[in-house]
Amino acid sequence: MLHIDHLSKFYGKKQVLFDISFSLEPGDICAFIGSNGAGKTTTIKSALGLIPFDSGTITIDDHNIETDPMEAKRIYSYVPDNPELYSFMRGIDYLNFIADIFELDYDRRKSGIDTLSKDFEIHDRLGEPIESYSHGMQQKLALIGALLHYPKLIVLDEPFVGLDPLATRKIREHFKRMAENNDTTILFSTHVLEVAEKLCNKVAIIREGRLVYFGSTEDVLAKGSLEDLFVERMQDHA
Image (cartoon, rainbow, N blue to C red; front, side, top):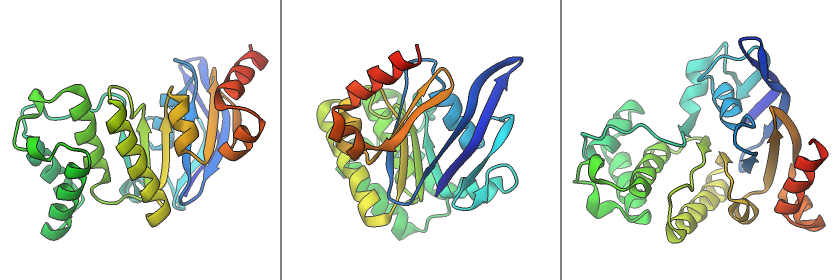
């Protein structure tokens, strides 16, 4: 589904990503973990064709992100850490705008909006302007917009920041259902290691632009905890 092969990137003369390679298959849920400034967001944006990179190959469902970007971008949804929503819009108008972009018919958009907004507990607030929403509500609205067209790949940058424990649990459960029932592939950056342990079957750890671990969560937990592995990899490469 998502294949990153030998990805490297420079900002000017400074190299910020070094030969990163990993692959995710349909149904994989992968946590992308690293300290602030490690290169998580740069890797994600490069992989999705949102910023240029200097070398490597990225394919999404066999579509090359450089030579076939439009088809690749139809397949995924991306939610940044601070989603830029149209604050003057009502929540329902924003979701209908997203549905228009993906050319969803009336039945599909209504079903999706009703189901997801009730599941994320903002259905009763959709008629209100987005500027009146809390950060957590805006995050939920962005997630609903990303999920409306049932993408094959969902990529999220710190999706659980600002969410209360109940909302985090609901979103985690929804991601699990999507992966299990629809073979949706999910990649998200996070600092919340407990969520990663409970939700993910794959883990990637980046340090100073280098991938220092990629493997199964099962293997990690068989030897200890994700926190143990993270600390070990940070110390190994200190």
